[in-house]
Image (cartoon, rainbow, N blue to C red):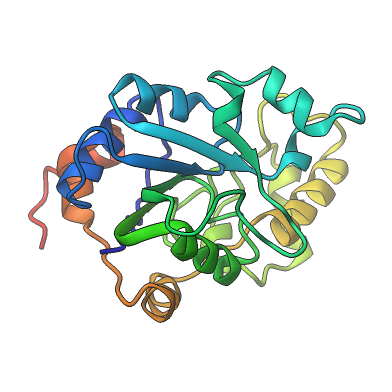
Length: 244
């Protein structure tokens, strides 16, 4: 079973608790399962999953952590877990740094809304999963409204991939920006538009479902489970209303 969890809540420090429960409840895997955090950053979630009894590993694009010539070395030197548990994704051709059939579960948190190459990613995740494995992905959906959660410009999730330049200028002029974002409102508008076009990729649930079914053979979006099992204001509000 491969499970896609599509949510509207950003991950917080309870991410590992939520995922530990989801791995058992949705994926049918017990503590001790071999888990890959896809898009692991500095390995914080890997460390937390290890603390909860999972055999956790992580991978990410090492060019995210560039700081001089020894890219991977710098990244691993600042890891929050055993650096041997973190591997660099090969960009061209795209390949995860693990053998076929390695993992019981692959998870990601707030990663797929950035990925421009979702089909490559799903294909590689399918390759590294064991038969009967599952993947669980938590991300802000295309319908996360009213503010895009990375740069706070209204409606960008819904408008992606088409948004006029004047929309970015309007909100920058009105003072909407990431805290500490430098430059004039024109600078901020240009940067936000560049980020929108190069750093975001908001697919509809239908498009994600279609791709998942083509690569994995199935798809699930258990929003009711998310509402009941997770923390956060969105979930708390959702629990107040009847839901299918």
